[in-house]
Each structure stands twice: as C-alpha cells, then as structure tokens.
Image (cartoon, rainbow, N blue to C red; front, side, top):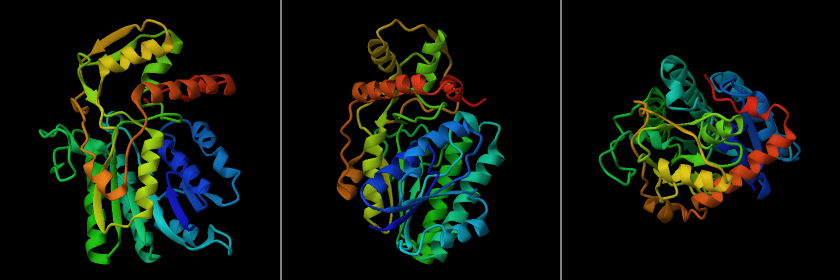
Length: 336
C-alpha cells in the first residue's frame, strides 16, 4: 500500500486507473479540473464510485497552477495516510482532430501543465512518475509495427506534438534531477466511459440517432484497438516497477481495419449500418501498429481482450447508461 496522485482522475483512463488502485489497497489523491472539453456531468459519473471510497480524495484543481497543486499535495490526505510516492499523470487536453486551430491551448495544458506536475514530483521526492503519452507521436512512421526507439519526430497534429514534447521534458527531469519516469504510449483505447470524441462513441451515438456513420478513407485504415482493462493492467505494472527512464507501448497487437470495425459493430447491433464516406483527415495516421515486446519484457504485459468482446462490453455499458441517464446522448455529443 502506498499513496498515489492521479491527475486527470475523472477522465476515461484516469477513472479506471483510480478504481484499480483503490481496489488493491492504495490511497489515491485524484486531481481534475473538469475541463469543459466534454460534459463535466459525464466525468463526475466516471468518478462516482471512487468518491464513495474511504481512501480516495478528490481535489478539483487545474494542473497549470503549480503553487496550488503543491498545496494540495501537502494537505489532501489525512494524517494516517502514507506520503504520496507515485504520480500517475493522465491530465491532458486530448484529441488530434480537436487540436487543430487550438495550438496555444494544447501547448498550455499539455506542456506547461506537465512541467508544473513534474516540478511538484521533484520537490516532494516521488519515487516513480508515470507519464501518459499517446501512439499519435509516431505519426506515419515508415516502420511497422511501431517501436519505442522510432524517432517520433514527424507528428501529424498539434496534440501529438505536445505529447512528444512532454516525453522529452520528462527525460530532462530524469537526467538532471534523477526523477524516475516511465512513459506509456497507449494505442486506440476503448471501453466503458470512453470520451465522446473517441471511437466507438463516434460510431455508436449516430446509430441511436438514426444518422449515418462517417467513414474516413476507404476503410483500410487500421488501428490496434486496446480495451481499457488491458491498459489499466499495464498502467499498474508501470506504477509498481521504477525503471529509470523508459518509453513503453501499451496496445493490443491485433490490427483492426475500419471496415472490420464496422462489420463487427453491425453484427453486435444486429442492424445494417448507413455509412457516409469522407476523405481521411490530415491529422490521422493511415494505420497504427504497435510492437509490444518491450511491455511484455519490462512490465509482464499481456493484453487479453479481443476486439469483438471489448466492443460488446462497451455496448452493454452504453445501453445501461441510456437507461440510467436521461440526457446521456447529449453528454456523449463530440466537442465542436
């Protein structure tokens, strides 16, 4: 048992990580400012289970305010709790497409905000800093599958550029201050609580509204869709294993094309899908394929959830939320 500070605690991945940490006996301080990128009500529902747990404390705070973050660090936990020894940094402004035209905002939150969190970690002497990056840093890398030693110096979106910048800054903190850092690059995460701007919400919500699905490109674009439980397993392994400074892919190494995605979705919904085709956005890579050998070797990572099973679980969650939350579809409207 230890104490872990999780930024972005009310988000999709963050809320699942928080619950997994609490389930195994850790104290958790969750930091989230409920950014208006998408529905704050949706995020509060994400964190509802954790809020009822006696070893969880939620701090509503913007990571860009380093002074306030340091004060939270010192006062968030009760005297009987251990000191915070690990930081799991998931807070970020997300989404490659959404970052177009919002370069300053993405830089401010993702880069400056990360520096403030790193500063607190250095000041308070944490033993492990886990930084969440993204597979988007690879862009259209010519080598497939993508490996952690690829240059990752040709991002396709401002979002990807800011996340790559945080990786490089974290290395400077490791080199100069001895901060132990593990950087995780998740690939196309999906599952219950997924954001409105992510697949499968972008596909499932239109079906319920009787609208056509948008298919970018000819359907051959491929992704390593990775179920949330598998990501959480890798995340907890990274929390527990300080490695100096490492960058590690987390993915399901089975590629799913967009055409196959729609086929599986139609089978699970037991209805035909109306599809509208559009050109591939410039911010989207043609395909993402991960080499996960490093994750297997260093973290004992092994994804277990096949895409049809994971998508079925998402649909079960989606239907349950439709019944429980009157304005659920409105909450799942993608950001403009």
